[in-house]
Image (spheres, one colour):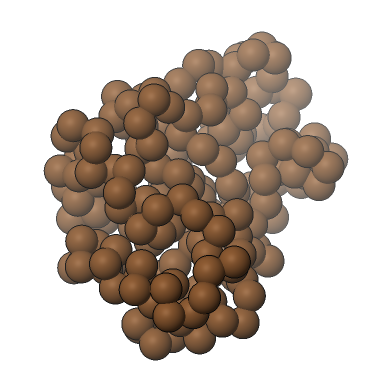
Length: 194
């Protein structure tokens, strides 16, 4: 399984539920990919229809929900007791769908966050398996170097649903077209807009 990590899910003003649906369907179009969506509780509740949609997709096994936080704040700078308070409030909303994982904003992993997560029954996500789509040593560069999607097995490709989706579109279709060059020829440099 190749995981596609999407944090800041359904923040208002970033394309809304319809863009998230299209992005999610793109990820689900390749059976090797599983969408891991990190939920900000106070944000998703403000997008009409979002809560129902993500829980429906979770029920179908097409969306793996994780907690991103109650709010998009620097939990690493927050005292442990306040972090625990935030986690309890967020988990009240997330259960029963929360699978027990917490991916903090900006991937913070300070020791007191591990302790807070453990105290409320969560596993703090380790960022060591996360690969960004672009940038030095990003997924695009890895595929351009001649590797195939097997390289990403049990790793996470990091993206945001509110981005244009060009690179993700080409990565999702990589196996179908056989090489990065062929994908680029089919979709062009801009790729498909999501």
